[in-house]
Amino acid sequence: MLDARQGSVPIYQPAMTPKEYSSVLIALDLINHPAILLDRDGSVLAVSGKASKVFDSEFSVRGRRIYVADCQSRMKLDALLDRARLVSEKQVPSVSHLAVNRASRRPIVMEAILRSSGSSSLLVT
Image 1 (tube, rainbow, N blue to C red):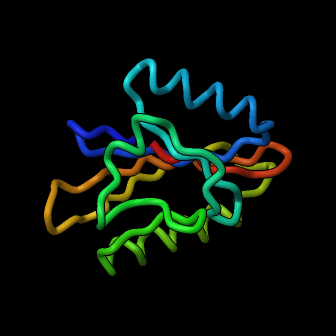
Image 2: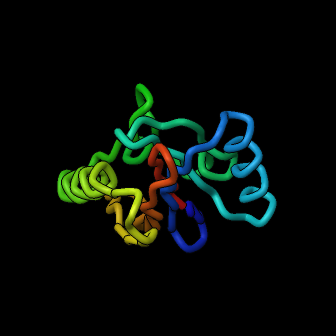
């Protein structure tokens, strides 16, 4: 979840239609839980309205990818996305956390739900 007050973000990628994941993001916004949906390869499928409010020059979406300015945070995000690609249909969904450091603001804590459901996807909150 991307929470400006707590500085957190979620990642999740279920097999859903664009209309379904749009509905999920709207529901998460209603409970003040920002989210970004990614596909198995880390491409951004959708961004909730609340999530877009925490974007800045150090953390944003550029060209359908999550952009992270901090080098160490970017390497950790890349490692997380690599793990998401390896999730098999037999694995139980798992949750990982990642802090994205920003020089000018508080860090963003990403909560990633790694799961497979037909075609894998990732939800970042």
